[in-house]
Amino acid sequence: MKRPSPEDIIAKLCDEAGCSKEQRKDHYQMFLKHHFHPHPPKDFLLWWEPTGKDPKSGASTGGHPEAFRVWARPGGAGGFERRSFGIPAVKAWNIKFYHDLFLEWKRLGYPERGEEFVSLAAPLDRQKEFKKDLVRTLHAMFQSDRQTPMVRPLINAIKEF
Image (cartoon, rainbow, N blue to C red; front, side, top):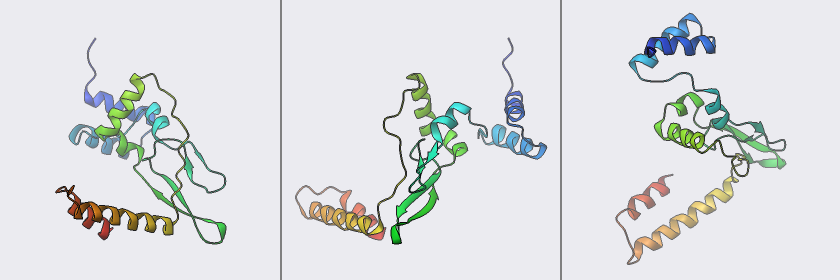
């Protein structure tokens, strides 16, 4: 049996996704010239994308923690502040690290994840305290005999953050 050409592969993927003529043209360029795959498979999307929403906070639940999702942080008056961050599925599919993680998950027989991930962020005051403690700890390490060449750049990076 003849192996399908890259042109045939992207044409079939675009057929399945229902891409417009303009999208097909863009996808053809992405796939053949830039080696960028614009159509992740459904099982990757199920593994990557959030699957629900926390009823109290509105934070995304399920999926991969680094997926594009809604993050919620406790705010004033008992409410929540929400922002969206993360890596969209199409980009993740084209990043070797995530692609390899997914293939390993498949190879292992699609094991269930442990506890469902909920994207809740700590309140800003707790984050600031953590940062202060971390800088103090690193500074103490830098002053000690256990000093490593990586400590000073790490302290400077955290201070700038």
